Figure 1: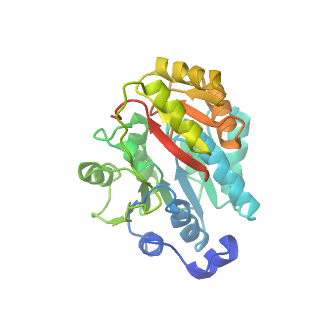
Figure 2: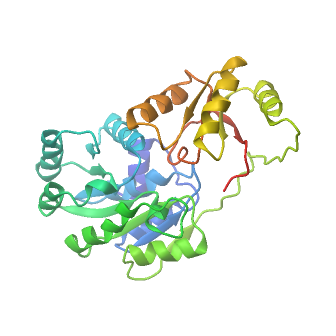
Length: 304
């Protein structure tokens, strides 16, 4: 089936958006491809459609467990076989998931970069018929980026186990030097970049000068309805601001890298579900968050 037909059958859309089709044609023809797309630009379609158009399994490397679970659930709801491997699973669960990818006609295997060098994964990978590799949040491979994750460097080893299999790298944030670095570190045969416009006509950027940040914060949050994120530069302030908001009848929770995975998951769920309205966080929060009703993003401090 052609790409357009797959889009219509599984997603119900008649047309691709922006550079989606260009990226799909590029990776579909076997070329290593880097796609720069803003949040909400429809990144997942750029690897899910070409993977469904050919036999074999698409390996999706992403650091975000919540996003993995979400995408696997969405694919299964559409009748597409998908599975995820992430920290917290038992060895038995991992073995069953990997065996399903070898024998069970699965289309998508989502895996966190930290799992790539596990012996069990590398042994089982050799028996899988992989058609393409997708690297989500690919800026994490670059030491020039703001969110460098050493585990991403293992991806080049995986490529050696899968010679001739093309890579699609995706990110919403990359400077020119990071763009170059991503392609070098992933071993692209030649540079091949597609850029989508990051201009968003529905967004407004406003700088407020104030003597009293706390009062201004409360004023803004009480003036604009809907879900919100408040960013601050240190962990202590996330807790302090969340407390201030709750004391003023604005439901809030806080999030930073020092919390346990269970607590982070729970707080993200509470915010996504609307149980609490405001997430106060450091920049540890934000990557891969998909919530359609966010109406405010406030920086209590100058962002990095």
